[in-house]
Structure formats: structure tokens, C-alpha cells
Amino acid sequence: MKARIVDFANIPGVPCPCGTARRAFADVPEFPATVHVTEIKLDADKHYHKQLTEVYYFLECGPGAQMELDDQTIPVHPGMCILIPPGVRHRAIGLMKVLIVAQPKFDPTDEFLD
Image 1 (spheres, rainbow, N blue to C red):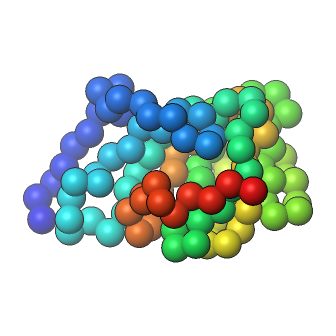
Image 2 (cartoon, helix red, strand yellow):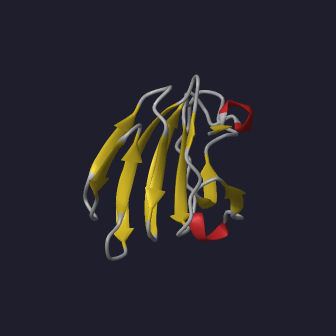
């Protein structure tokens, strides 16, 4: 596999339950994940995945930013990281920008809203 370089500023944003996601490396068959930069909207939808594991790394957080994980709500701030296994219902609360690593590669059919 050769090195790949992406500039997230050049990746078109797509709507997702959280806000707007820019996804990279879906086209690299040798890489078993995708990397996303997601801008979270205020009213993100609670959802879960049956196959996907996500790692959220918080880049920017507005005042009062939180994550809801099943029935637990925790405050978050830049520099924090959360691993979200399949089946955990989750949503971000408040404005934030998050780097997400999704494994296996993101699949929109594996996104279920409550």
C-alpha cells in the first residue's frame, strides 16, 4: 500500500445524523477503516451501529458540549477520546468538531436511529 494524503477542506460534506461529515479513505481497499471530520449540529440524532466501532476524538467543543452514551451523559472537551462499540446508542449534544475513526469502513446502511 502506498501513502495517501487527504485535505479535509477538499472533501465534500455529507449530511449525517450528527451534522455534516467529511469522510476519507473509503476508496482505499487495503485500509480497514474510514476517517471522518464531522461538524456536530446542536440537535444531533441519537443512533447506533450494529457492526461499526467508532472512535471520537474531540477537536473543538462549544460551551456545555456533551456526549450521550446509552443512558449516560458526560461532558466533553477538546483532547478527549471516546471508543463507541457496536450497539451503544449515542449522540453529541452541543456544537463541536470531531475526528472519527470508523472500523470497519463506514456503511450508511449500518446507521439506526432511535
